[in-house]
Each structure stands twice: as structure tokens, then as C-alpha cells.
Length: 191
Ligand code: NI
Image (cartoon, rainbow, N blue to C red; front, top):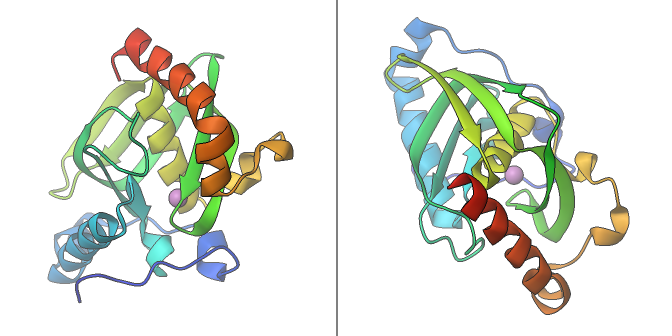
């Protein structure tokens, strides 16, 4: 199929928790082709990540990749990552405030508290288990994508709604202060 249509907030698919994929299903041509489509769609839309329900699919799969992303120039690189049935455990109490955006929430950004340290458990696209700790700004990207798979969007987690802004407003009024905080976090954690 190739590039798929990304659905926007208001579409019920974004609110339905996704379902786990079995090993047999994961090995199928159907799911492998779908993963290729997710990657292609994420790259086409210049997203940092994309979850299956953002293209109207109910399987618990997301993809993440950050490489000089023009939408998020301060984000450290994350190599192409395919996560099947991911689960996140928040580690510790420390949070940072992330100015998030989303392909499913056009022209809006807002500040969301995220854990600086998480444990990620998932399968990769070959079915091999992934179990790693992710720290710093990158941890926010993983939490955002796993939220999607649970039927949540970042708007649900915005505590201070006065931080909501258009992308133009973000660039004019909030970018400088946020980027310096984001870069300090990246310097501290290396990711
Ligand atoms: Ni999103």
C-alpha cells in the first residue's frame, strides 16, 4: 500500500486501545508489509514516530526514528525502531516538561510531563525481545508513542492548557526557552 493516511484527533481509532500481535501474526506477510507502510508513512509525514492506530489499524505496533528532524531539531537521533506489543514502566519520580506535537493533532503543541527514565519491553519486527532502559528527552518520544497504542493523545496529558500553541506561536514565543531546556536535558543524559 505504501504511504497511508494519518487520522486526526476526533477519529475513534485514536481512542481505541490497540491489541497485542501474536508471534505467528508478526511473521506474516500482512504484518510485515504493514510495518513497512508505517515506516514509509512516518518518513513521508516527517514524524518522529507513528503508531498503528494513527493510520486506523488496531494492532499494537509503533515505529520511531529521529534523524535531523525539521519538526524537532533539538531531538537527539534515534535509529529506526520497530516496536511490537511495547510496554513501558516509568522508573523513578523525576519528570521533565516536553513541548509535544503530533501528526494526529495538526498545528498544535503543548507541554506534557514525562518520566526521564523508563523501562521498555517489546518485540522487534523479527519477534526478538527488547528490554532496555531509555533516559532523557528520547524517553518522552517512546512514552508519546505508547500512549497512542493505549488510546491516548498528548492533549490528555497537558496539565497547563495555557501552554497550548499553534506551531507558529511555538516558534515565535516558546521555542527558544524550550529548546534550551531540552538541550540541557540531552547534555545531561546523552539522549
Ligand atoms: Ni503522536
